[in-house]
Image 1 (cartoon, rainbow, N blue to C red):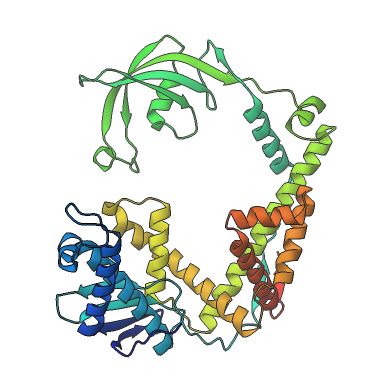
Image 2 (cartoon, rainbow, N blue to C red):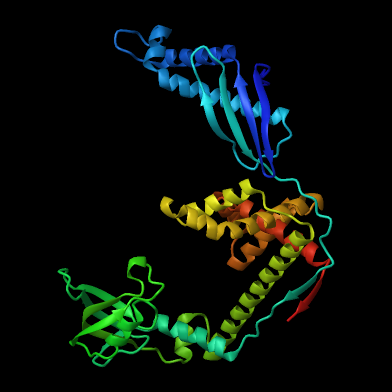
Length: 416
């Protein structure tokens, strides 16, 4: 059912790459009609002392529910105006509009502004013919053994020792600043992992359990509390306990414990394969960054300011950045947000231009692959992904894969 919007006036008052602004004016007559409808709705449902349900005079309803009626009218008219704007203007919005500068007075037109983030229009004259390098990191025996050592440490219990501690060992200490009235505070520290000031760690490593010592430490220049950077402090330290990891033997029993492996050699082979797969993913990611950067440079693309700030806002929310740190955060992360926007612009443009958007067939095939790896039925995987809201994520990933396959096929790639 269509809605007559002849009494909604929409004027474009601002344009920039990635954004548009519309000034909206709704006639007083339409506002009054919306108020009457909202009032009638409340009159049917309202229960007020001294009146039967549905028999409360509209004048009383308007006084009693003034703010609620106003909110209802605003929601209705803003929604209708947004639909009218989409019909009238050539817009490709990527999010719901922001409403600002609302003027809503009795017996007067309703006015407000819609700020809209839109899909930017770009032209890509050159997308191929680039020289690209795919950096390959050789997987060494040392890398494999390092992973195995990490596994052993995760499986190892901490056992007390009555010796001076060394790097990699855990200590329980009490620390107090000399000259301050505060009680000593207990800490548990793994030495050598940057959990304590270096000078303090060095002092602890000269002690044995049960010993106390007073030492002077200097706060490093990058200490989080700026007021203490570079300053000396005299502290009293008491070492209560030292614990050392009791590493399990590297044998076939250990291999069976950490996974479905018959021998240590089987474990090593699996770890090597995992590292090789990870380095291959890193190499592919580097290659994709390189091709996007070269396309951006070759076509003189710039990230639209509104879209970059939209990404920045999402970063700030994800990292729960406090308000007093937003300016510093924005300055530091703006280049990252701009690169993300440019990447998305290139991918979206090419996916549409070259018809590379993921199809239902592509999605079905990927779900079958996931189901096979998990030993499940495709229908179960589909239902699980749909319930978790992840189908769009997989579709986007498939589209990216198709776009990058298309792009990389048009440039020269050297493995290094």
